[in-house]
Image (cartoon, rainbow, N blue to C red; front, side):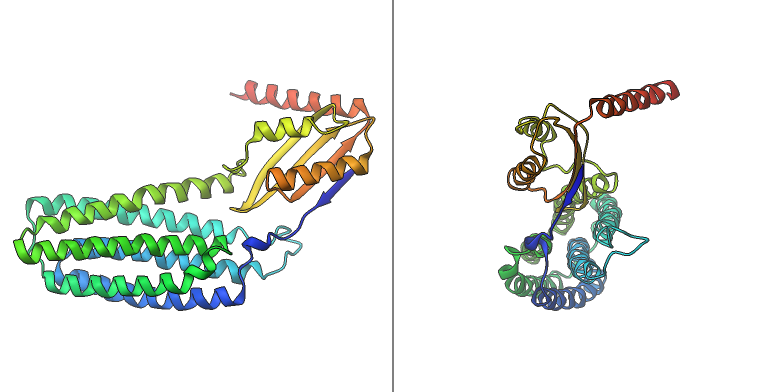
Length: 313
C-alpha cells in the first residue's frame, strides 16, 4: 500500500504584492550598482568597488527571489514532473560562484595596492557611499513588511541589510581619508567588506550544492526522524528512507514501513501528522507493507548494492 500526500508551503509562496516590492528594490539596486562601479573607477576607491561587488549580490538575490515567483507559476509537465522550482537553486549556485571570483579579485587588488596606494578622491567616494546607503535603506523599508511572511523575500532583505553595513564602512573610510590622507584605509575597508561577503557566499554555495546532490536538508535530524518513525504504533521496521529537498523549503520524504498488524489508515494519519508537525515535512510518500518477504527482499537488494560498490572501488 502506497500513499502520497503533499500541499503547497503557504509561508514560502510569494504574492504579487511581494513581486512588485522586489521589482522596485531591484530597479533601485541595479541603477545604483552601475553608478557605483563607474564612481569606483573614477575615484580610484577599491572600497567602493568592493561595496559594488556586494551590491551585485543584492541585485542577484533580488533577481533570484523575483525569478522564483515567475518560475514557480509554471506548472509541472511530462518532462519536468517536479516543475521548475530548481531554477532558484541553480541561480543561487551561479550567484555564489560569481561572488567568489569577485571577492578573490578584490583581495588580489588589495594586495597590489598595499605597496602602491593610489590617491583617492575621498569626497566623491563619500557622496556615492551616502547615496548607496540611502538606496539600501529605501529597499529595506520596502521589503521589511514582507520579510516575515516569505522566506524568499527574507533572503533578499538580509542581503540588502548587510550591504547597508558595507556602505557605512565606505563612508567611515572616506571620512578618515579626507582628514588624514591615509589612503591605505580604503584598502583595509575593501578587504573587510571582502571577508564579510566570503563566509555568506560559502554558506550559499554549500547549501545549493547539497540540494542539487539530493542531500538531506540541514534542518532535518535524520536519526531522530528514523526513531520517530519506528516509534509509531504498529511499525516493526523501516527501510528505503529517503529525504531530499527540491528547493530550500520544499522537503520531500519517501519511506517503506513494515507494519503487519497496524490499521493502515490510522498509521498513515499518525505518520503524516508527526512528519508535518515535528519535522516540517509535508511532501510524503509512505509504503506500508505486511509481507515480511518483501522487506527481506529490499534488505538483500541494499546489501547487494553496497557489496557491488565496495568491489568496484
